[in-house]
Image (cartoon, rainbow, N blue to C red):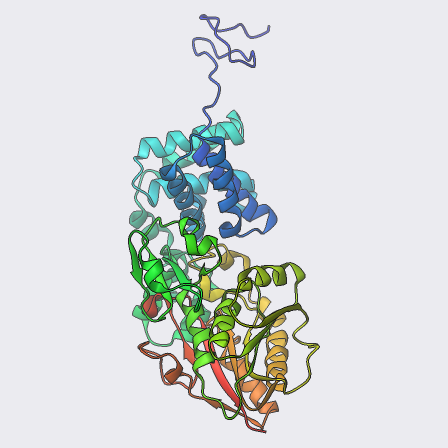
Length: 481
């Protein structure tokens, strides 16, 4: 016998009858949570980065109307908070489902993770967090799987984050690395690598892992000759940078696109660690002329724009080289309007079109795992694998060797990475210097004036929990023959 309509005779617009005594209700679309779900799906399905996916989604939502600044702030928190805490939430959700986590469909897991973050990582009331997430599930997954989401989230809601972590993380004394991995939501191999790079005991690594899970400040750079920190500091709730003389920090929620100098390209968004690396290369003393500078891995152009401006102040010219043509286009856009001479080319840094010994200063900010920027790209911690080091290592060594070949005798090379992993930092420099007896590592610390806790040298490793920057590494090498 066919099911009869409810006694009220109510149906949804689709004509689907409700259960007896319970009229069918069309799911309510919540634009904030739907947007967050779409961003997480893009990160999972397309290996996209949230910092690239989210802005156009937010812009499109604003253009449709009815989506204000608070909505944008909540959507951003849901996306980044869920990605940062993904490992912890996975461990908790695994305790609340009746199957291995790998057997849960990825879209369902994304919805569950969004719900877990609202329950355990925000101040959203429990009832609101569960009901809003179940409603999202009805919209994007369907009624059947929404019931599963409801059942799981009600189990998650039975304890707070600290209570859950106490249940799912192994004791520190039994397995320190696994404990830290679950508590601070990092893959175990990343915990191990960061601990090796940092050295020391438990306090330091815990502070670093906690810093990786904090929302980073938005930092602007005033490009010399085109903007000033005084101009940028006139922005509402702006503050001077900590270490770079060209840095200005925006308060939480500050929108760089609303800053006139940024819109015009006279200033840019650039982490202070990245600024310090460019400045260190410019500060290193030379023997002889100082006319030709090279940024050998210039994309997407932040360091190149600062270097070009600094070079222009000294009457020098910058050549910015980037292998990928579309990234070379980004470099050209960043350098447009530079007050001095510069050139942007698309070229492979391991097969350079320029002659050996052509440059006085060379920066090689090499491709790497990006483990130093996990605050900004939290999904990178889940995407990277230890075997990626095998891919990057030979390329990093080849690019540093090319840099030494490209600089003249008496000139300097800056080798930089946005990773503190020893296999990408000191190991690369040491290996290449073994093949280059006519090059010497010089103490880089004096080229970071005012920056504290730079270690024993001669190279420099910056840290999020110490310096408030990305974990940039730099070694400065002078070619002697």
